[in-house]
Length: 412
Image (tube, rainbow, N blue to C red; front, side, top):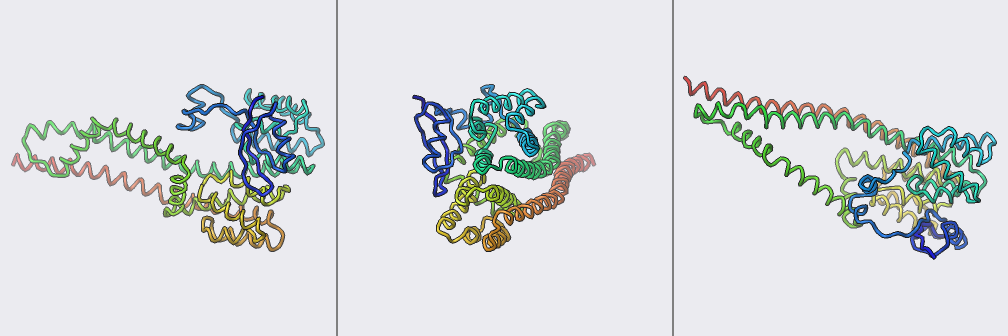
């Protein structure tokens, strides 16, 4: 009998992982339900992939030519269209058929056709989604499962689509803001390297032929240019290897927790990371609670999507507090991971029995502050890079001019 790895949320809200022998994934899901757990994922238990563990799943797929999953844009569009079709009174099979027929590309069409086939064979939509973790996250599957259990699938999908669209918009804001500074920085580095390795060496024979005593700054730049020209490729290769080694090291809980805590303490960037984490936490929690997921189970799902181990530790402490009836606002405030307003708004939600709506309101605030913080950082970063590039180029030119003046002194 084949073995299946599973991920589930147990009755206490704790994340549960394990391996179960069963004929197929559907039996694993059914057994977990009978145990009172919320199944999130069930997949065949295969051997470990060293390449995937070291370099990451995305690079592993690229190296072996594997097919990547749907993009976040594809998933958000599919969710929105499915919600509209179900809200209009279309049955699930008809809605999935519509998605197959109107798919924008072959990859989306294949994914929707597979989902429709599973549903037509008698699987619940959440079970069909859980068989494709490369396309649908634990959060996605958990929300759909809660919507199916409560008979509010269309409403749940509508809220899920809104959450995906908000998250995608926030991510796009941050990524778009980083494009111009990144290109500017690369251009600055390229210009400096070009001057050191191509322009400056043109003057070296002239200096040597005249036997001029070069200023210290000029000799330093000539040495730097020689180093970049001869050993620069080895430095670059070393940096790449160091980055891969750091990535492998950060897969360990201890170093990753320390690195995540340090990132939150960085000036300027740390504040932005706190706002992003708070937006992710409150948007996910609010969407889960409003869709009928119990608080403890919702916190278990939220913990899986945070991405920052310091924030995960804070959520775990809040889960223990909420399980004991003390609420989650106080431990979140004591952890000092999220901005102060996060705990304040969540406490108001708990006191007024409006935790879900208040969490979504907090998410709107944090997302807006994230956008404004990115704009503010961008307004500082671009001039700073421009000034540093100008200073570096001016220093190189000044060193050349000083050397030329020494030649003039020698001729006089």
